[in-house]
Every structure is written in C-alpha cells, then in structure tokens.
Amino acid sequence: MELFKKTWVKCILVLTLIAVLSGGLLTILNEVLYVSAAERTDRAIKKIYGEVKEYSTLLDNDVSEKIYTSDKGEITKIYVVGDASADNYDMLFKSTGYNGYKNGTITLWTKVTFTDGEGAITKVILESFTKQTLMSKFNDSFYQGFYVDVTEAYQNGDFSAMAEDKGSQNYNPVSGATYSATASCNAINVVLKCIAERGWESL
Image 1: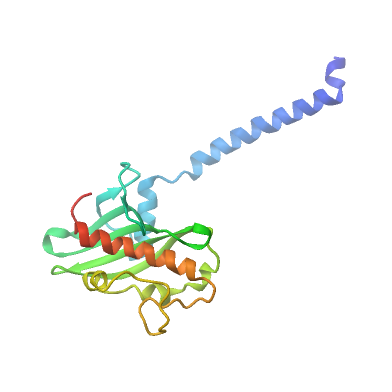
Image 2: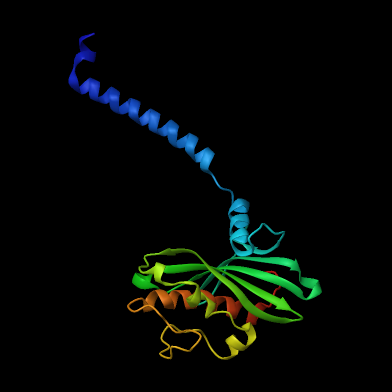
C-alpha cells in the first residue's frame, strides 16, 4: 500500500514498535529486579551484623503509615534483635536527619545495644542521602563519634555539627560540609529523643 511508503507513517510505526518493546522490557526488569521490603531489611541487617538475624518489628512504615517524627528528623523503622525480656538485645533504627545541604536529608541505620538496662550506640552506617555533597569524606571515624551511652548523650543535649573542639564527640571533620554533618547529627538526635520518650515500647 502507498500509505505505508510514506515517511511519516514509517516514523509512527517505528516509534510505536520502540514504545511497545521498551514497555515490555521495563515490565520484565521490574519483576526481575524488584526487592521486597523484607529483603531490604534483611540486607540492612546483614550490613550491620555480617549475617541475617531474626528480628521483631516495633515500627515499619512499609507495613503501616506510622512514623516517629521530631523537629530534627524522623524514624521510619525500628527493629529488635534478640530477646528484649532478657535485658540483652539490640534495637535498630532507620532514621532520617533534616536540615542538610540545600535542605536535603541523610538517612542512617543506628544500632543501640542494651545490656542490663543500659543502652549504647554501637554501630552507625549510612543508608542514603538527598542533595548532599562530599559524603565520601564522612568516614567511619565520623560515625564512631556517635558511639555513646544513649541516656547520657540525651541528657547532655543534642549532637551538633558546630562543635569547634577537634576532640569532641560531634566535631565536623569536613570543611565546607557543615550542613551534611548537621543532617547526620539530626538522624542520631531523633533516635536519642525516641529512646528517651518511648523506651522500646511499640509505637
């Protein structure tokens, strides 16, 4: 037919074919690469412990719409690893700190270890961030500055990225990245506040 010999018809057919093939490919990839909420949690726990651990859920915004919020940030997931009734267990918090560079955020996983009723932060790892720069400069030594007794830390006030003393727990080691350090501090501050207010009860 003469119609199919026209250039504009050929263009439409080619574009339609590309759209159909691309849509089919995206559908297949979406199924193959899909990661469930449970799988994401298992991966986070493995990053913290080196292996997958059994846990119970206190808060998970993938299951319900509940989150814990404050002016510093928000907590979207809280898990308990171990037996809380035995007074020897860990709590894992996925928290997001506000007020980063360009009003962006930083999300951390924080492990708080409780032994005989006393709690201390024993692990902090970076999960994700938005709009931040120089994040590669925040190494393990920066996050280790948050490894403190949770009760004492909260009573002494919030972590701050403005500390000038290089020996302080919350000193910002990265010149020009104070806002990013602030968001990291706030991700920890919201965890401290949550523990002080709620302990380990379900939210």
